Amino acid sequence: MDNIISEQVINTIIKSRRSITPPLYEKGKVVPDEIIVQILQNANYAPNHKHTEPWRFTIFAGDGLAHFAKLQSTVYKDYAGEKFKELSYRKLQDFPLMASHIIAIGMKRDVELRLPEIEEIEATACAVQNMFLTTTAYGLASYWTTGGITYIPEAKAHFGLEAGDKLLGFFYIGYPAKPFGEGYKRGNIEEKIRWVKSDI
Image (cartoon, rainbow, N blue to C red; front, side, top):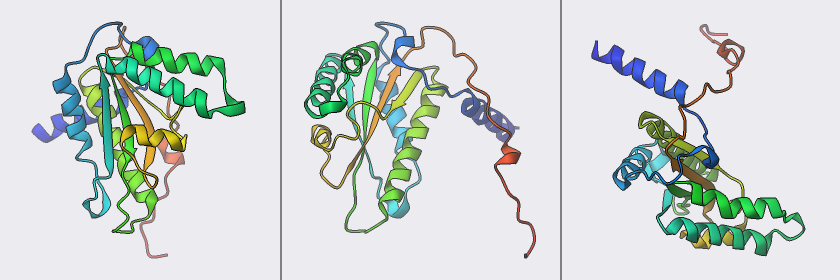
């Protein structure tokens, strides 16, 4: 019976997961730091080849949110060049102030083991999925964005990352201002799988 309950719970959590953007967070309501730590503890149990644990996290909270807003909008303005958009610039300033916490997601490269880079990126993405599922279990809203300064090489140093590492975006967390809505419908899984049950 315990196994059945556990299966029902995890199935419900996975199906309930949503990407909820900061404008939909409850303004001024702060997630306890202990919950943020638990979210990252769960991220730390993601699968990873050779036990490299490549994920690295920088947490912005309190006045750190304003620091992050200034940092990312400044970096964007300095390096966007002809791609600069005033709307994007303002969004980078405003969105962080709507969140309870923001977690910068980094991938630290283990060059000595010479693993394919994609495996380290995939492991970090698994860690982020653990974060998504944990925020869902706590009834929190969360959003992983790879916009803004994510792919600006000069931005990496601000998050303790070096040239060979990757900045993989930012994970916003807050309390939802209203109950989660139903997400978009998924296609039929039968159209995406192929069974092989014999020696062909």
